[in-house]
Length: 271
Image 1 (cartoon, rainbow, N blue to C red):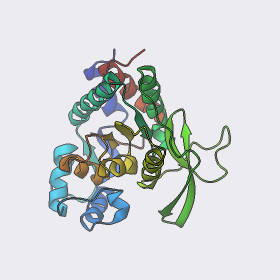
Image 2: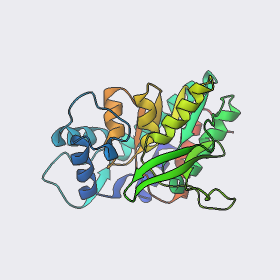
Image 3: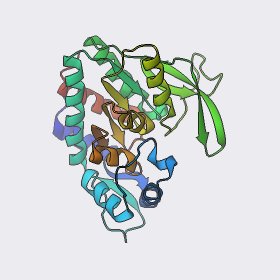
């Protein structure tokens, strides 16, 4: 079993935590846009209160370990690995709880190039524990506004994990899916599940809009988030999101494998 000390060292070694690749400038820009309620940064969350820049900095310092000093405007952001470990423990606790009651789950990612393997392992473990891994709205079209304008994507599932692809990109051996922050895919999936008469997920696992969109609709939602994704941490602070794990969500996919082993062991889901 991977120890906490070994995992902590791994987090720092591959920069999942500690000094991460996300720049301070990028994070501050996201906080300003969130404070202005820009939907590109809200990604499905409708905040209950007003969040100014200083309040967001205080929240992100508390949840991630970034600097709370608004005068620090350059350099790389920092994530406290001990906060990451604590959140991974809470994340594993939610997996264990849904597995114990064999509740249906929905998994989806806006980061398929990096995080698909992480979610696939969770989906397989939860399925083996008796949870129904839901795949509603397979093949459904979703119109998402991007920086290039309105684009149509298709909702697809890879080994139980939802993602979106550009039309025609779903052939075997093709690209793993498109990067998106949008909450529209999870809204589409949940609406399709409801229209079909259920079952509805007792837990949604994902990132970006998958967590925020589901949490805003009242579903329990958990997942990782980087320092430039304040929406998930605001959702957690306000109670619409259950658990957020602070980490760099853009490192090489194999770097997440020790996290997978750790949370599955903690959740007693290892095979």
